[in-house]
Image 1 (cartoon, one colour):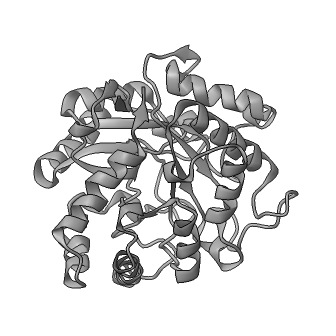
Image 2 (tube, one colour):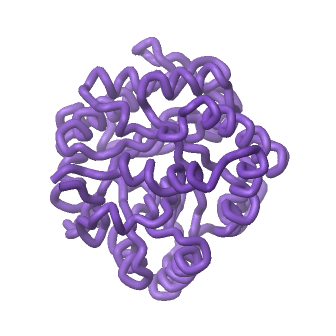
Image 3 (tube, helix red, strand yellow):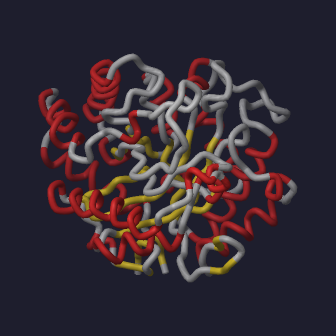
Length: 346
């Protein structure tokens, strides 16, 4: 039997509805949880997030959301579970970490591959830990992440392993590959668009994952369309992995939404026309709620917080259809593909 492992338990993939494969219900950079100015008003914040989720379900048919927030960036198991209870949304949590330059807390940097593997497996099979307490809420997928993020305006340097992957990230990725093989769950990844200028970070991630026995068909490479390169996209797909088009309506390292949406759509349609429909998924990478201090030049309010949840269906899907994509292909991309990738055999 195959199931989705949601925060409220295992459910049938038949209940998936449309998928959002990379979102963040609660998102705060590491350390934000220590700030007096970001203390949660839990009831009001849950209600605020749940209203957005419910609107997306009612108006646009979303039924499953993968919350890609790792522990050090605000993963809150009880909040995810409460949003799921109030809305009926299938919420899939992840285990894993942010890029080394921005995440992977010091404690975990000292752990071996074996210890990291055990952590991931226990998150997936026993329940996640929060604020020193065991919870009953299980993760349903794994996140890996590489890249400089916004720390420096340049690609990642070459690491000790010859890839543009740092030493701690390498251990985390190896553990993710082992845990995915043990549990049979999906791995969804963060790559840095700037790294595609000097290497193919999706392939570097896949090389390590496959060395540890992971199935590339259960892997989604994220953010690869922000600066799309046809050869690199083909290289990832030809390995049997999947690609996620995200940042729809959210310009990241691009001047305008129109510029990003159009170039992503053109690359996406090209892959569909070449027969890769079954290896493609869509998402926003949206922040439903980001506790923050004052908006400043060094900590601006980003477009991840402002894109409307219906934008995919009012703007981007029509853009794809205008380029010849069919309703059948849209259904596969927004529902069937993700349902296959995120299913776990039990």
